[in-house]
Image (cartoon, rainbow, N blue to C red):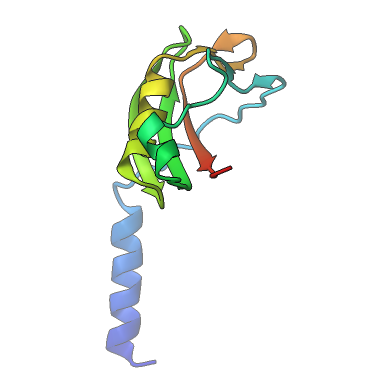
Length: 122
């Protein structure tokens, strides 16, 4: 390694350390965690009549937040192989769902959920 390269490495290493502060986060031990639990009526999304009539199938992955009070919000379509009507049905259903919120150490928390819904023709 050349002298100038060694000097450059040492200067950069010293500059990164000078004035830089690293603060370590305190360790956290979680002894109890509960995932959100849906309490929805109907228990699953229902495909629109038109989708059933045309035999539309596919998968819909949505992401959403279950808030500490159990309401669902920030619903977004992450990926879908299904007709848009099926994605809309999932979003409508989730918007009307009540959840028992997730909890850490017994305290309700907001939690982002990613969920896959599969629509099959019968």
